[in-house]
Length: 79
Image (tube, rainbow, N blue to C red):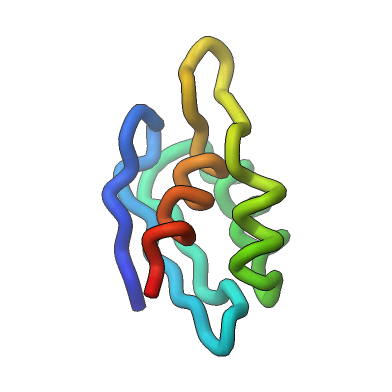
């Protein structure tokens, strides 16, 4: 399991794993519970590259980032 400390969002951390290039076990700590659970379920089993392509650059209101964007950043740093 990997952990990523988020920046600029209501969530404070994202726990996740990448197994055989696929995203699994995503759990946001904090944030809007329904939305973060939805994002976690939608990316489950998705390739790391596809998840990054779909989520990177999403903004939350006037913020320059969002929980989905932070997941993309976490995946970009993932081993």
